[in-house]
Image (tube, rainbow, N blue to C red; front, side, top):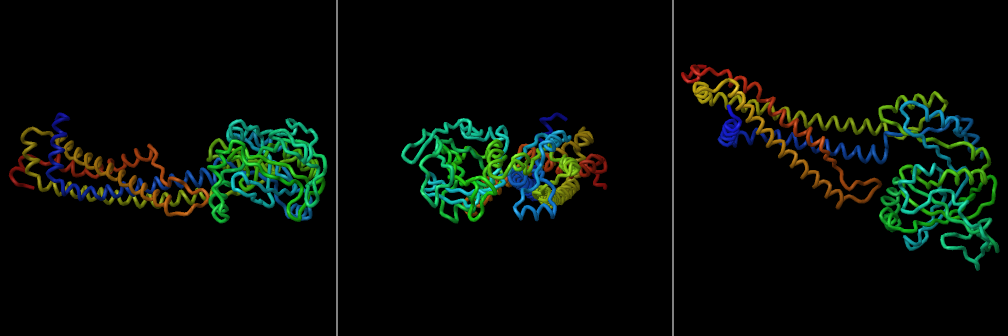
Length: 469
């Protein structure tokens, strides 16, 4: 049978039994819609939870925590660190893509600033800080920003309240100027470049800004040509002070948002952290790293890399990524299973509809066979009907899922209050997802018609035309 004739016969039969086929296709449409809806929601959850909050492609390595070390840390001793030789060994572990050593400030700091953006200075209290390799954050910097130790680039010329520094430099006094008046002479220095993490920006925008009636930071920050300048007191925070060195006030300039920055704090060039740790905490604090972030070539390497880390006497800090990954997977499996069952039940209903139609049209099928139609022609007609039915039902289901997702996204944008990592779009309809769901819906319809098509092809012309069974 020619393709054109087959298409014509299929279209005629579908039109003749439109009501019957429409009722049968409702189940497929609903099943495909729910399957696409939940899979797209799961993909959106993975993008936010596992891509932005709990990335699965990295682990944080820390020194071993012991009860003795905890007691010494409380008493003021410097905590254990990771040696540079251990960092080199981690780089040689199979499955490791990159190793990011971090050097946390081993002394207290505090800060305030933001008048240019918020209209008033905002005090940050104690500010955790660390240092990283500039090469890792360079792609995330504002245009023209320099993420390196500014000590060598500063003029260091003498300054005072009456003799200002050149543009871009600040007068740094040898000690914090309050509660007494500033000393007469300071040194002109460039601000220390700093980056913050998207997580900190999300927390600020979703929690801190609404509660203190401040503007959201993210969009404003990226439009600031000169960055956000922060007054940064080194060696003192509240009642705490450094073990050595003289507390003084410097300036930090926010030059970008990077996922390589520490979650809650600011990140500066590694050379700055090493220099200041040596000044305020001693050579030991400047010679070891507080933690190391290990980036994996593939998330499946997590278990093997974690074992290699522990074999070196180090520990892997649990971020919750594995647990969240399992939770998202479990939710996806449950919702997908419910949708698949809906499609299967609908397919069984379609099979029943085809069997009923074949019984009703047994005489027509016998006449077609008597006029020269082969068994293959009859099978092709039934399977063509099921294919067309699946095509229409799957298309309708995908459109219904997209409309439902659009409605949910609109309600989330307009009704849900801001919160950290609130996505603009909760559903991700990737081409692979759409193609997979579409193929599943069409395939379920075609498979449901295999038995009816075989039964129709086996109808004998003589028996059907004589009214036999």
